Image (cartoon, rainbow, N blue to C red; front, side, top):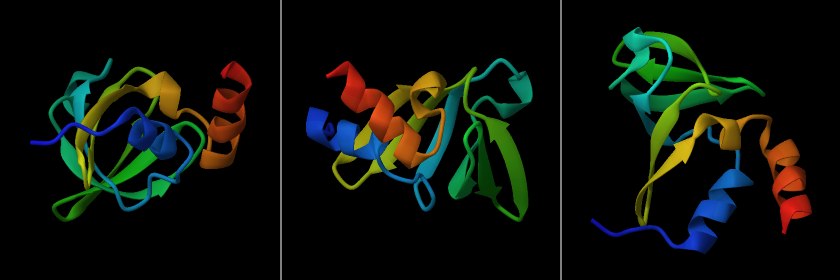
Length: 96
């Protein structure tokens, strides 16, 4: 499997996550660990995932997520995903 470039990961941080396939690698709530599904809605602190016929709200903050991109998959800590895409973009631009 290919590994996404640094540019791909930065672009992901500035993009709405709706439509991406996500797997939860680690979470403070054990019932969410190893779940995977399609993001159908993103809020500042939560992801709404479609898993089979169920929809599950998962908090971003205490998790480690594997996000599948066209160029491969990447692992991102939940705190990097907090906020909507516009807020994430402003936050990460300030750090550069």
